[in-house]
Image (tube, rainbow, N blue to C red):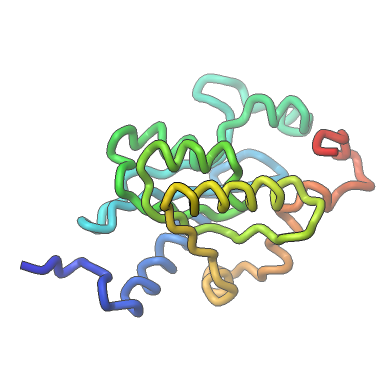
Length: 192
């Protein structure tokens, strides 16, 4: 018996559900209190069309997320959990064979190691830009290299999918780039 929920041979159905989960990840990203980066992740078991877990970037449970801590970039980066990490912690072993949808930043190399080890089969996220000096693009490219080597499929979020959730690609990328505010108060020289 074939699975009626299968996307096999039905790319239009896959695209429709990918768009829905990308939209949900974007919605969940808004729950983050981080004033500079809002990232959301949704882990989905496609075989049963079931959302296994969600996550957004933030401090661990019971750790105060004061405005002062969130504005201190160096301190914040030492304390914050990424959206993918939160989703994987909530999913536990149920993450095996899931797809993960990530909106807000490219998947970093550390999250890629966790996704690989958890048995995630497919990652749908923002594609990092090659040839930039952006930290997030550099670790994102490393993440894709690791995922490909490990047999984890990487699918970049398309411009059409970003448009569908109301995000202009160029505006979304500018907001994600930690170097965008280089002349501003947020330059701590962390990634040089």
